[in-house]
Length: 257
Image (cartoon, rainbow, N blue to C red):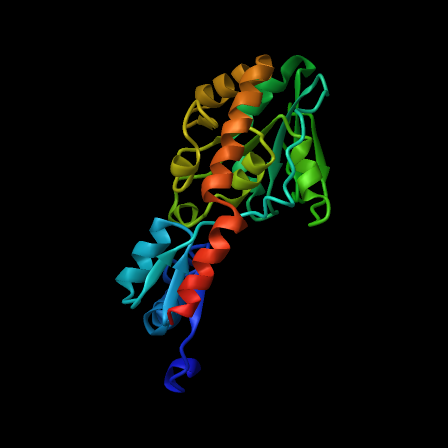
């Protein structure tokens, strides 16, 4: 990189497996020309900050001199704890982007099962609009100003993911957001979700359709369980995934360069 050749130290931060855009690109010419692009950036950096161990292992394999782990975090002052919504219809919430909405199809059968008879609905925040027949849902636009209020309207937050290299690089920010609002979460047992979620304590890890259906039904029927899991999730965010914890760590690392 230019900074490296000018002998200027630089720091890079990764919370996605962006290197797979190049080294796993379907076109051979892209893999050949750019497959090692991110590796070089990591190798010459004074510090590589990563949001999970998968990214850290990749950085070390690329020859990074110093690798530090700082997870995705939220500002506790911004994410206020509100009571569970009084809406009698169990509200399943998902927050993401049009690029990740396709993962909802992984749990389509589970969603349609739990939503039958009008006892549950799905709220999508940030989706373009995905077709899930048999699932009553609303699509809400995402904005920084309203995302916390949107999550506070969920009874449970979900993060279905495929077991792929790209998914392994994800850092679970959406789970952390929901937990910060004291909402229980359900996620596929992939990557960092397995560390963020303590199964049956602050949420559920669900692999098969039956696992998702069971988790939905248990949470739908038990408000006290939702509240207890939400409280446990918030406590974990306060201990491990808050700006208040991460900022001093980051400052110390930057001062050490």
